[in-house]
Image (cartoon, rainbow, N blue to C red; front, side):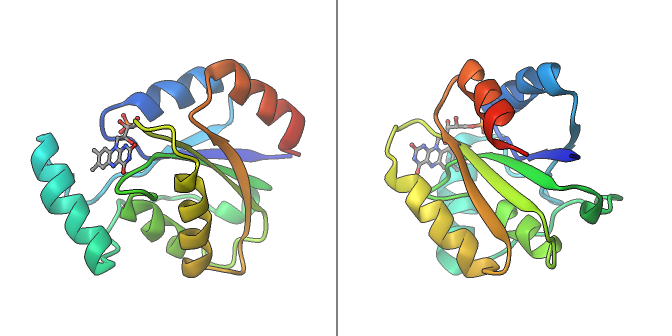
Length: 155
Ligand SMILES: Cc1cc2nc3c(=O)[nH]c(=O)nc-3n(C[C@H](O)[C@H](O)[C@H](O)COP(=O)(O)O)c2cc1C
């Protein structure tokens, strides 16, 4: 089985988590970057850029990858919750993997531990591409839980 970790991070919580997870697995790993990076200023990023994208359904351009996603059985997609769902760059990524036949496991983290966010995430992922096999990963769990989950579930 070949697995690929794909992640987006802004303040590096997700980055730290995936790099720690990957010390255990050594999967290939890709980071999603907005072509025009989000502001480093929280208020600009959250209340101007991210808010506009989510409210107007804008899928911002992301940097290109030179990867054949179809070489992988599973994509493990990690992101923070932004405005009650995934950041819109995750939506852009889902559009880029159109036709992917494997599983896409989604893992989210956020400030507030509200499981409704995962329900929103699933709903919004399926709105973008209902032909992809999305599988629920973990929400706001620690490193050990992730390692155990991946060993147990990701086949
Ligand atoms: C633009 C933006 C929007 C956010 N929206 C939410 C939210 O709706 N609910 C929440 O609990 N946390 C929200 N957060 C907090 C992040 O989900 C949380 O801090 C996360 O751990 C950040 O991950 P990162 O360091 O990988 O970027 C938001 C953060 C940002 C920057």
